[in-house]
Image 1 (cartoon, rainbow, N blue to C red):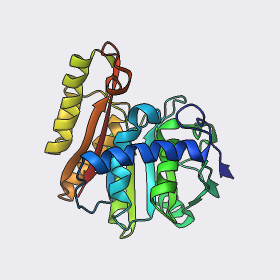
Image 2 (cartoon, helix red, strand yellow; image 1 turned 30 degrees about the vertical axis):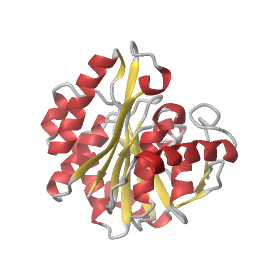
Image 3 (spheres, rainbow, N blue to C red; image 1 turned 120 degrees about the horizontal axis):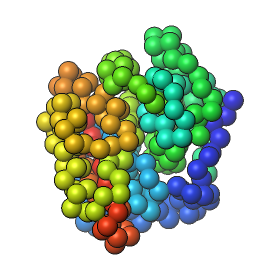
Image 4 (tube, rainbow, N blue to C red; image 1 turned 135 degrees about the vertical axis):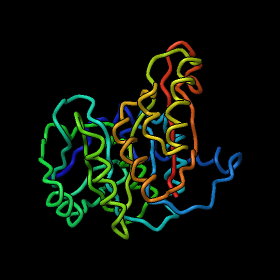
Length: 261
């Protein structure tokens, strides 16, 4: 079973050349204006909107990841279209992208399946929060293999256990997908998003429930909880909103990328 594309042509382009135009544009800005930190990480938070809006934030995280030496990842994101209890993963042969296929990590799939007894809900795997990460992974992490895990009505502590198990594996990393607040004016969005950022920077999960609005907040809770336990240091790589591109400050969405060291 192949994990087919479902949001190509909407969240990201259909053609390789058009995706590479985005990546080249982002990298030109980074190389001219931003000094990327020289760090190693196995865990990042990345956004998942259309590349025109959130791609720059995500691109910074993947620039960091490509130098970390990790090639096996679990990509974790919230379900936006299908509601269900808990988390799900399915066994795929590979993941299709316009840049070429990514191999599924069958060994990692089996470990997670056996350890956490996760069901496979095939109808869930047309999810954009995880899929928009795949072209980034294919481009920046050569010979990568991945497992896609999607959650809906899940206890964040269960995600914490899964993430901790993943990061305890020597050569496996985790990619946590989330956007931040949705459709407030810019001032209000900044206020709400700063609560999320403060919670991450302080590794304080209680702050996430004091005003942070993020579609992937449960995944963020899970990775922050694990980072606190494992004494990982969070580094905010980029924060911006859709207003940076659209100019519309009346209804914005927030985007964030973070690395845990």
